[in-house]
Length: 380
Image 1 (cartoon, rainbow, N blue to C red):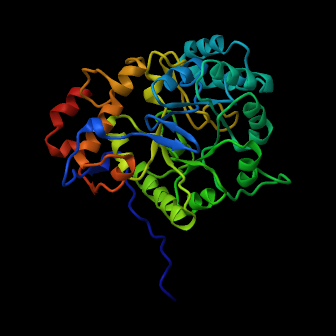
Image 2 (tube, rainbow, N blue to C red; image 1 turned 135 degrees about the vertical axis):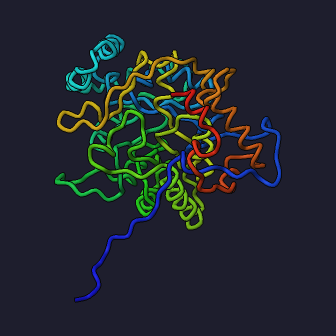
Image 3 (cartoon, one colour; image 1 turned 60 degrees about the horizontal axis):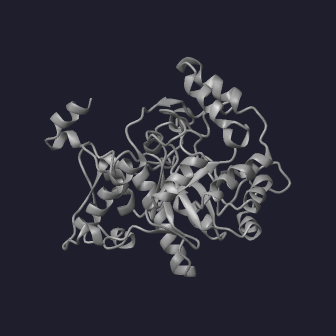
């Protein structure tokens, strides 16, 4: 009898398990450039708001645009199902916790209306803001053309796990190369966590890749189906695909780490791991400008058969200005995220996000073991 074949497991790392090593030189944080490019669009800060109904509506998209970021509007949510989404959002926020998922399932059972997709896009464009819209792969071919015709600048195709090769019973599924050619605007695709899948997606001609399966505060994918990869490892692996794609083609596809980022330190670690930008959900849901009224829930939460998320009460902790740029008196890193990024870049001697990718990262012990126990107790 031969030796048994044993499945090999490799160690993967999340934000709390790594630390950034300072550089041999330092720079003035104010000199650090934080731009993110997606296609021909350049954003002053490398931050996107998640396509969650509790995070992004037309007014929030306009507000984040004013701060230099990009909000992605969920065009399969309440904005595209109801003429008056604010009343529906109030109903969802008011539902008792034990009935929240059932309320979400009921609300999201209403049909999608193509005319409302165009209407929401027009509301954003009327204010002069860049408009990004999100669809699942199943609905993209039906709704994306209407959104682009109404003025959408960027199309995001997003599901829990997205690959370039999907097997289904449909005659012809979504082909990303054909979508890129059809819509004529930048296409961002997600979510992905492996080098091979990332490289195949980039080879289709997409303009950005979302990285992350399972890390979000409102996501229960890891608990429900057991699938996911910690964000630092997922970002490192997908950034390797980006670099290989650039080496082969000369075309740079930005990697955007999506989910699990709570603090400025998390954001900085995502960048050092190789991200060009980050997508935030719950931190934005905690702002006064968010439509969720102190709650957040994911796109998979209202699934009619297998919900993979939950409505969470996140509260309201400040404004968009405070979250992104301060000023703040909080010492836990949950506000002034861009200020934290600039300071990190200064400590690492990085004048750009690309230079920050070159910073060293080490596997680090849990923060409780490094003399921080009284800080941790103070936050509990």
